[in-house]
Structures are given as structure tokens and as C-alpha cells.
Image 1: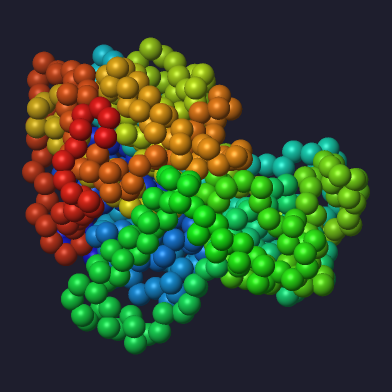
Image 2: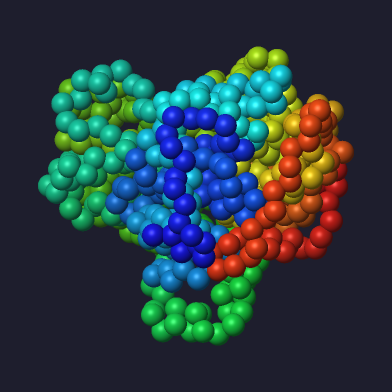
Length: 534
């Protein structure tokens, strides 16, 4: 049931048709975009979700122990801060419930179409529309918003013999809840964020856990405490406390980000991670195997207070090698290690740099986004607009995230930019806007130059931050405050705008009320923006 203070309206019938906007994906990004677009007066829109329900990565990842590694107060929408989180770091189910509750509160269900897959999208220069072919028919939209996110497509384990393994094999993002791990010998392949959460959650029921680790990770303790109901009661009733808490946690994240951008300052943080390992793991051989040979922050920085204690259990075994093949029930490591398992769980992460629709999204010259990015990898102006793809907006696009940033903080800055861009489009009567090639090129040159001295590039490791071309296509090299300022105001001079013979009418935004989207969050660190290089 929607909580919007307006009469119920019939949902758009299925089968495609003319719409103002198509949003692809119904995770944090897609839900936020739908709410913001409706607030801006774009009432005739659809949110297309290929799954049977909304939720994105928090719908897909249901493995034991799955939780956020960003404090809950930061991992929530600025305009819906009143969630009563049960822990400092919320778990998967609680975050998914928060998304569903927020979507219902703002009436997203009226425009949501689940079970609809986008097959192909093409920009039609003659009509100034995106022609979006779906399993539900063709939609013709003025604006296309890609909200599929970077944590979407699981990275598969591809080794000889895995297909013949006689027991269950599944990825953490495709957890098979019919498989009981009690008393089973479980092989976990991968040692990143999902493995760090998974292993402590299953070791108490498995007969044995074998963790295959290609590269050790830096790990900081995680203060994942329960939030007493009395604290939530006070947060609800004392004005400004939630905002103050959020600002304080934001400051801590920014402080860590400053260290990662200046590797010479990382010594104390790395020493804390080393102390955490030394105090928890007494076995010197195991401790050596868990000690990275690169600088802290070069890969995604992980947090856990339960991973190391799980690894020291006698039935948990760490194998510092990649899996090279599978023979029957045996997994063979690259170093010759052979272990026998009943279940194989691949904790191998996601294809972070590969936009799911890039191969089927055609721009002004007919080339796909994948072909456009084939050389140097994904590039966009402010991570949002791509030359040759008018009226297309990427959410959580290239070079916007980092090892210390809350994705939701970045998303909300982008939503403010999206709203400003669409206001300009409608008020000026433009049919389309396309970021200028020189603007995009200058911006990305500045980003790559700034990344050169950060720990992401200079930390001595390889990571999913990098495209095969060698360019870092994931990380933002400056502060989140600077990102917010850069996206706070839309600069029309960065775009080529085209005007139709008859300008489109400007809709009147819905008046603010309960359930509506309030004013933009203030730009953290001050106002202002620059046209090309933020």
C-alpha cells in the first residue's frame, strides 16, 4: 500500500508504449531515481526490473552472514533517515526490507514492472527517443536511466572439471538454500568481501571448511554492535541526532579516504590491521599466509571481527593458492594442493567493470556502449553522461566509487545532478543533450592523472578497480565532498543541446508533502561546481 498523499491511480498497462523515462533496474539506484523523477514531475515513467521483485544486490545476495560494510546510517537514503536499524552494520534481510518499505512509502510500485528484461536499446536521432526493446514490448522514452549497478553480474569460476563435480556448486550471489551444509565438507573459493562474511557464518555447522585464497586481504576489526531499542527511541525523538550521527560517520569515512588518497599517511591504519591479525592469529605460519604484500587500500578494504577467529578453528583450513582444476570430488590447487569436498561455493565476486547492457545499447552512430568503451574501458563525464549517447544517464557509473565511500552518498549526489539536468532539458525545450567529446576527454584525463598517486593505483596490487587496458575505471580520486560539489549544479555548457521544432511542455513538479522527495542534501564541504574538471 502506498503512503503517498494522493488518490490511487491505475498502473500503466503492460506492453510498452511512449513514456517520458525508462529506468532499468530496481535496486538502490533505480528506486532512488524513480522517486526523484516523480518528484520532478516526470510522472509517466517505468522502472524495468528483470527479477520478480525489487532489491538489486540486496535481493540477490542471501548467503549466510551477508551484511553491509558501511554503517547503516550512511547506507540509507538522505530523504528517509528514520530507519530503525538493529545493528550498526545492517544485514542483508534488513536492508532489503528497508528498500521495499521505502519503495512502498513513495509509491514506486505504481511505475515498477518486474519480470521485464531489456533486450536492446537504440537512440533514434529522428524522434529524439530511446527505443527500448523488452520482453514486455517496445518503450519509446525521452530519457534512459541505467541503474543496474556495478555489483550485478557474478564472476564465474572457470576451471577444468568443475562441471563434473558430483556435489552442489553455486556462487554466493546465487545461494542454494536447499543445500544443508551441516556435517558437509565445504570448499569456499575466493577470499574477498563475501568470503570474509560467509566463512564465520558456516564454520560452526560444517564438518570442514577449505578456503582457497589467491591473495590475502587487509582486514580491520568491525564494531558490529546491536543498536538497543532505547537508542533508536532516542534517535526518533531528539531532533537532529540522526543527522549528527550520519555526519560523524561520514567524517570518519572521509578521513579514511584521505589516507587512501595519500599512501604515505597509511602507516597507522596499516599498523592497526597488522595488530588485529597478530592479536587474533597466533600461528605464525597462518599469520604469514594472511599478510598482504601490498599497501592497505590497494584492494577493497575489508572489515570483520569474526573472520580471523573462524580461520583458527581446527576444522577450517586456509589454502594459499588458486584452484586450477577439479577431479571428481577433489579440488586441485595451482600449488598441487588437493582437498576433497562435498559442496563448492564460489565467492569470486562480480564483473564490476562490465555494464550489463553495454553490448545491447546503441548510440548516435549505431555503435554499442561496449564498442565505444572497448579500447580504454568505461569512461563518462562525472560518471554519468557518455558522449554519443544523448539523454542517457548512468548511476554509479565509471570512476565514482572508492574504498571508503558509501555508494548511497554518491548515488544521492548523482540524483541531484540528474534532476538538474532534466529541469534544464524541459525548461529550455530541448529534445536532447549530449556531453561534448572534449569535455568528457578532459575530465577523464584529469581523473586518471589524479589517481596516479593514490593507493588505488600505486599500492602494488591488481584489483577489480582496473580495466584490462590498465586504466583505473572504478575509483574517484578526490573526496566525496568534492564529488558532491561537482554534481550539485548542472552545467549546460558541457553539453550539446538540440531543440525540436515544438518544445515539449514543462510539467509542474508535485508539491512537497509527506512521502515526497525533499530538497537535495546540502553539498558537503561547500557549494559551487566547475564545468569540466571538478
